[in-house]
Image 1 (cartoon, one colour):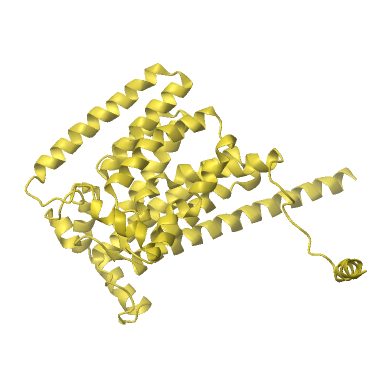
Image 2 (cartoon, helix red, strand yellow):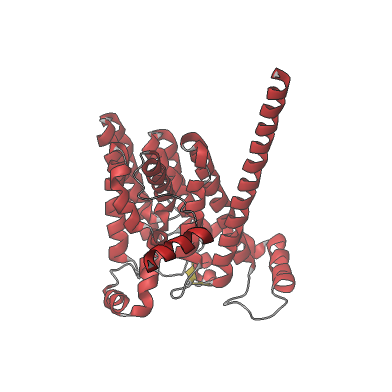
Length: 362
């Protein structure tokens, strides 16, 4: 009897391992599909040659981290072969996309793919740590929201070479702050610093997190972030001082975005249409998680002030922590029995419907 129970336990473990492997494979394939869709179905907003030569307008040129990647790709025989292979074998030379796959675009896609897989893998790690029953949920929500906000575009179908690396670095750093992993968060901030200037949005998150935990010494990390960010932005601004600039508030896009019904669906697609349900689930967040959201609000509002609203990928740096918090909300709501109605409502049988109809008639 004990031997049979041991065999059943071993069989269950093997089956559980197989299921985890299948789910991880599906998450990987979903990530690959999402990133490929972003680069195939969208058009580069920037002139990539100008960006690599340092003559693109600001603030796009100031996001300097991907410049070496583009310059290397243009000289790389490997990237040129990959570009020719994609054009010949994938598209068969036909003009079925908005722009050709240059060697630099292949390199940007590769880096973006690796960054997105890193974000998804970190989501799996967090799921296994906190949500063992639905460990796949944070990563699945992240991929879903990324696809809706960046790939499934009806308008403003643009891609940027630094976006996906920034989303991964910023999102992981933000969660490290939520966890209190200050050294890891600071190192990720340093890595993200030349990728995009919005890395500074981590500072109010760090301050809110330190206040929530009464970890006043941690304020030093936030101060160091501010100092390094200011130094980096001053150096970059001076280096590209002769470039044209589009660093301004885009007032002219606000009214058209609100009065044009064609754009309403895309406006609502921010955070994958889940922003309002997230607000409704506020009571399922604990104190530290709420302070994390308080720290994120300044960055979200500043993005809304300077960004084009119907280009909803502008908020995608928050997708990974949002996916984690939404997963917490969903699981806690179910565990506490606060989900109204049955989770699965059985379809009435034919006999039951016939008896119900007879009752109504009589």
